[in-house]
Length: 223
Ligand code: GAR
Image (cartoon, rainbow, N blue to C red; front, side, top):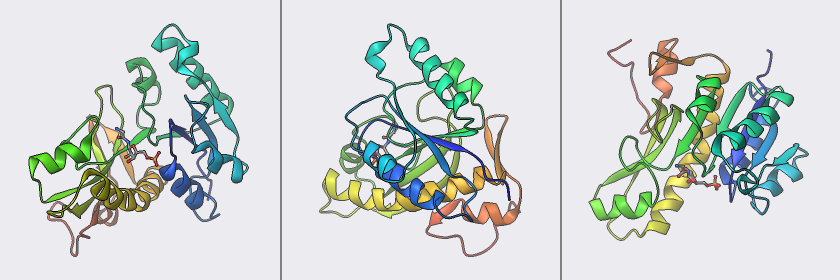
């Protein structure tokens, strides 16, 4: 099995990065993490990369006058590491259309809601305010519009009536840590691809994996 070199972009805590590093450390996992890029020098998540001996590149966005210059520096770092897939994991910068186009079908993001609900920030606060009974998380292909690319996999969690944004965030985050490695595996194995703005699955088994919780118990009628 040829493994697919994967880079992770972060801005902060890095708990999803940690989940991806742990998955990638298993030789049977198809996507080892070979580079971590942060736009923030103080991002705590950088410690996970250092502990795992993974090269780190800090590219402070404030060093660049324009967004496209920052994105070009990120792109250059990815290419010099021969990265083939890029995972955004709590990376809180908008990427230019040009960058997104360059990495078309190879750029994925995790978002702490069941997209297309609750794009953007203060997700859990807004979910609670809206009174939804179910929330969750989504790994999606990145397209130019923020949090709008086609979902690859999703996981649902209940919203309890006594939840506050922190308790709901913790429940969703635990699901994120399972979901992101699963999605990365599917992309690295070529079992899902971005085609005409949709996530297209190569087989029924892959489709069965796209809803993580609750798990689909029988084959989708689309299969
Ligand atoms: C995660 O909950 C991730 O889904 C969210 O930021 C958090 C990062 O946590 N991302 C977004 O909201 C992107 N729109 P982490 O740094 O511990 O992985």
